Image (spheres, rainbow, N blue to C red):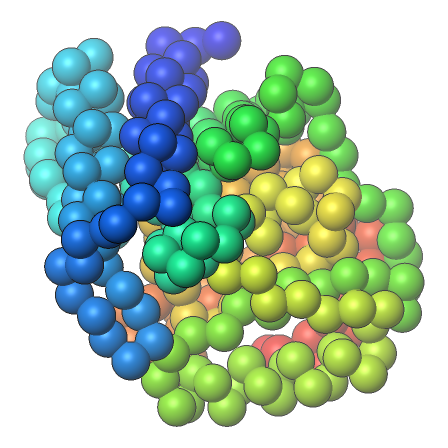
Length: 254
């Protein structure tokens, strides 16, 4: 295990302990929007992760949902989602995680996702295998969309909702089941583990998907990431087991 992965796992577990301890307790809301919630605990979780990472690598940059710390002199950037699935967390739904990835010159080299409620920790290093609780994992063996379970991410603006609904409606008919779970990072971890066969979302941020994309690729799957055509500055992602013909998944998804 390299020093970067070891530090990411330590930080993810520490943040996971923090959010698990506060699960089900009264929470301070920093901002409440029509379709999203920002918690004071999100900020505390990211501050804890950032502190632990920068103690080991003080010159690295941070890109996080709750703020960034740039350093133009380094080729290393940590990509952090301190609670992916905040709305689930706020409503007492135990489906959320901490996601930490490290990019070197823009390429993801380490990924860690930790679900503190199930005590499930996924990790991967570029060029290696993907692991769940230190057990090697792999994507599903499904070869046809009719045999598949697909998770569809639903974003927040009207344009994003319309696009996501068209994808959902199409795959609801053709796939075995469709799911909307509320945590992009866990969706990707589930694809890597073979629980889902594919995950599709048209408007996400890097901190939502960076660790999970590495997991999927290291677990034998495939991913396609592009600038979002729905919302400027965001990303469009398709991740799947690599065995289903991509055309079956992209009938309404360019």
